[in-house]
Image 1 (spheres, one colour):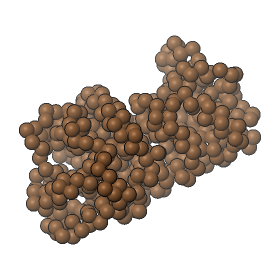
Image 2 (cartoon, one colour):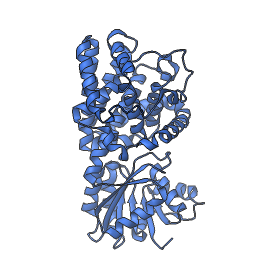
Image 3 (cartoon, rainbow, N blue to C red):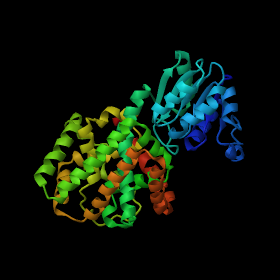
Image 4 (cartoon, helix red, strand yellow):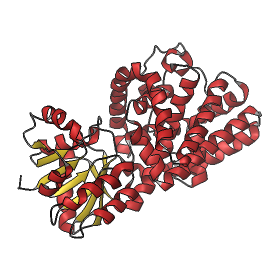
Length: 429
């Protein structure tokens, strides 16, 4: 490689992934985290010859040609204020946060004027192979040469590059992640409130239920701030999470009151609006026989009908907000593709959709679960609207502790599920 050096400030899971990948590609990497992690990081990366752990962000900033801030979105302003003035003259600076509004504001406020700004965002978690996954590059204040250098450095990921503005990124990220996260967070909250481990309950095993369980556990096995930052710092996300809670509540009330005709009309109107672009295309993103392979429990003799309130509400939410999810497939996360896939599976199967409606009106099997799910969706929405990170963290970590004994198994199975399903849906994206 040339004498170009890459700097990474913030060595959480994504920062480490970037450091390893870029270093293995032959680039020189200077990286740091908080001072108390210095020795631990030095030991962890001592065999990575191209990755050099530094004692502070000042040292990283002074010697790097592209500096990437990989820190929590809520902390980006304070961290850039601290290290931004030390940026090497003529360098390029970017960030890897999931919400670009506060990131760009911090860069414009605290960076020297002679510094170019080129940000990025890998739309997947650190455990997912970046090959073929969406990678957003944002040329905010930069020459074409600077933008090309960043793209060249990140080409080692073999990701699908998408060029957006910061504003476009935040809107699309909200469309593809905010409500998806809210749905799975609410599932976990409902199971914990009912003191349930769903993989031990026959009605939650197999097919679509496997996606719900594996992805919910996958989310709760991660760090709370990954989801809190997107939810609270992205204005579009707040609106969408609030609408999801409203959709869940209104549909549940229709189920409770037995208003079959009104419920049917609303569900079918939402489905027609969201899935109209699919027309009569018989291909589905997901199929049940694939999903059945990824179960934490033993498959029951036959599946128990579920009204799938979480999925019905998702499509209702998209409909109310005028979102067509297929418009964002190029920028979609693996979790969003799974969520869209199982939603499409229900709505584009007339018999299964009718079964959901019939179950909603006639069967009380999931009524207790749906009640807690509705409470959870409303509670998450209220916490997001409050904008208090500590209130969000307290709820997240309480549920996280409840499910933590099964995280290793669920993470392994979830990784296999995502890998298999993404391979099968790759040609459709």
